[in-house]
Image 1 (cartoon, one colour):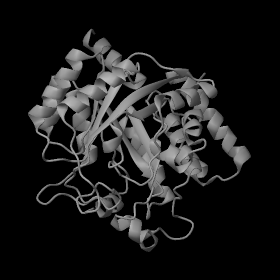
Image 2: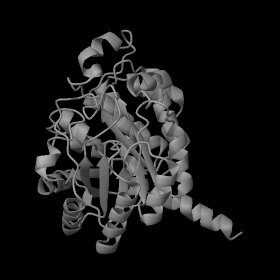
Image 3: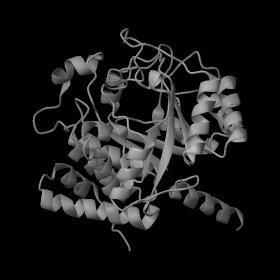
Image 4: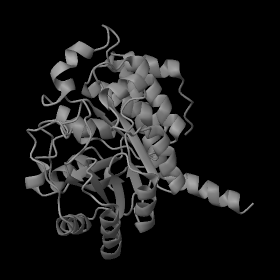
Length: 357
């Protein structure tokens, strides 16, 4: 099956489409692209949010340094290894190590942890540790980390800078860092929030175009969910875009962006996110999977820590058994093995073929 290139005008039109019958065409198209390029398997990832300490002051995130109401924690190496062994026992191919930008986490400690996971388990290691120096990223790659996830959140530079102020004396260019990650050899992921106050439909068109331009291996898309202990959560109405231009933070709009991401990046791995499941507990996870997604992350951190990784409030938390049941109910299969991005595999084959010429 061949899928025609989708233009910016078509992307814009789909984002503004509200007719359910017409939207069925988008859902079917995205699902067909997903089936052709990544198949029916849904790969499960074991997510370990091992530290909620963060030096950043992001206006939207409950982990921001200015949130004095949050109980802070940092898991030990032994606790993280217990989670990795749990992921292996559950048959997951990947463990995702995620944290805030915690200055107390040393480069060598992370590298040693990666080496231990790789030596004691068959798991692939994905990192999501925010903006980090190139030397640290290289050290972790050399230690055995395979993937890195760094969301650019929004392609609108002014909106991004308002919501994500830089650290004093440092400038953070996440797009440049994504290129660096690719050059170092990571399978590279990024993504956005949908419905940020101040985000317009044109911004989301540009987001989708940036997915395409970056040729991402992984794309994470979730709705913006307000947190009252953040500046944006308290003042959202003041910064909303003008009437008719503000993107809603609904499950339908999130699914539109998931579907469009699948069409423009057909061979990327795309999760049906926890944020989407939180917004629509009844069927959000399933809708994401039926509209382009092929990955689910399952939180395997101990509950006493999990409740304090509060990026947004009231996060959905489901058991391995419940998530597997949801996947099987919609006629999909549970993936086995590493679950590498077909997009990454395609690129590696192309590079290897070019080297033989």
